[in-house]
Image (tube, rainbow, N blue to C red; front, side, top):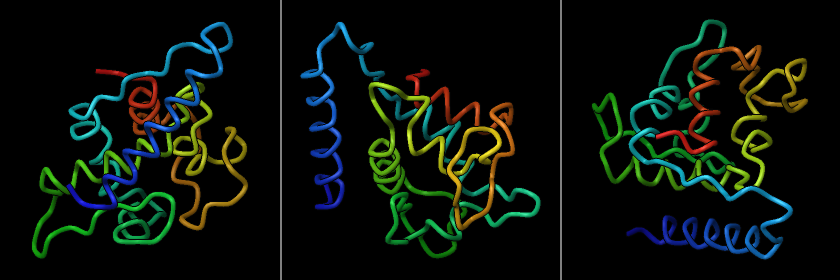
Length: 145
């Protein structure tokens, strides 16, 4: 396991522990995030070309920003399992376990008119919460299997 992955897992565990300390009466249990759902339904979104936008991977692949995606291996069209697990850990760190709908992972690429952040240097990847890819990301954040 890479040191970065270990650090991200520790941060996620700390977030989870913090949500437990809040108390069950204040928040629903944090969703358990499913790696297979992520790999099959969310990760491909990062490589998808969306009209008028760069692919997420262009800015987030190997970058030093909140959503750090693993660089693809030379000549590869997809990530290998180890790279996907690192991507899963990076995305998991952007999920608000007590309020998944308000996770940075969902809000940042969403248009402000639809409830997103005011600034995303990659543009508004999703004009609304009705976009099928955004809905897959939301389902993942809420623990879909």
